[in-house]
Image (cartoon, rainbow, N blue to C red; front, side):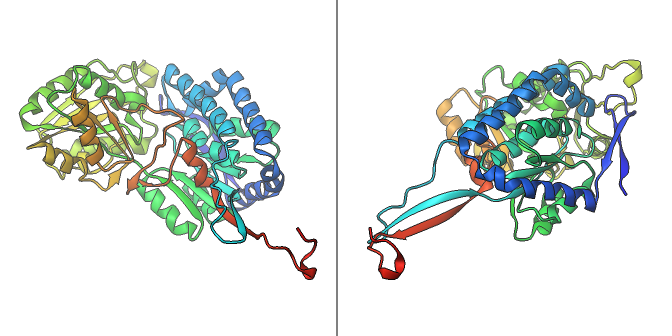
Length: 459
């Protein structure tokens, strides 16, 4: 017997509805539906699957306003952000619909005398996809689009606070892809754990390090793809372009800083520390919560922000403003914050705040700046800022991260891969490389010699 799961509006902190708290029977039913749909879906030609995925993209695109409203309901994102993310999700589904039609399998002929060989890349089967609340639609599509395009079926488990777009997409998928090809399963952490332990063939998880570690243990020998967060360094050299401070702050407050790849730790040479604090502080003053960016997603996230800022040993703490209507005063709004003059073991540096917070650290040299950039266990993304492109590119190669930007941050496209190292997990999102996350190779080798009497017809 399932219970209703209360949903809150992060803008007001008030109840906005409820969703199903799925347990073992619902998980088993969703997986069974995908298992039943798998033989037909995987047997389709890449072209046929592409046509159906394109139909799903068209269906979402024609309902873009509805999807944006659903995305805002659970996240509180500004309207422009939500609309842009729906547009990106549609583009990504279309990208993978066509990318899977490009055969990248290596031909392996001539490796053995008298034999010919081929490598087939085949779908894994039923994939359990578990995504977080910061980008409910986009993170889902990052995972499910390449999985579906390569012939897998998908059970999608959205975050408990943001099930809205997942349910809408699954409803449309039933008519465009076929019954059971994409199912959505609402619920909490326990629901996700049940899904990982169920009869799925692989798990794609995006979320916290703690959550990813739990998935890895519960999944056992199943294929896993884990994207587990950032705490991303930003190395700003003295000759950085003038727009550096404004661009860094803009990226740090986008989605209220709730992005795994958001800039977090600004690292500058010691002699430029005060200039950095001044420049970042001035840029941050132009970004007001409730006007330029939305709230934090939930009460736990707001409490995390309060704890880290309440215990920081930073000598300088600059906070922005919050400007919201009277009926939103109890929402999970938090201002942007800049922390400077803090020790290297301060929680604001060692933990991923996942909020509109920037720290500033001085480095004695460029070598020391690289050490600070690589000093945390997470290694997802970073950026380097310098007018000397050769120096910036050289520095980018020395930073341990899956993605490094130069004189920009949070710039992504479907064609470029994104993935972490170390505690940021493993696996690849985006680009054609992500197709391999959801496929496995099969080698077929055939003897070319004439078959004997017992072997059938001679060649």
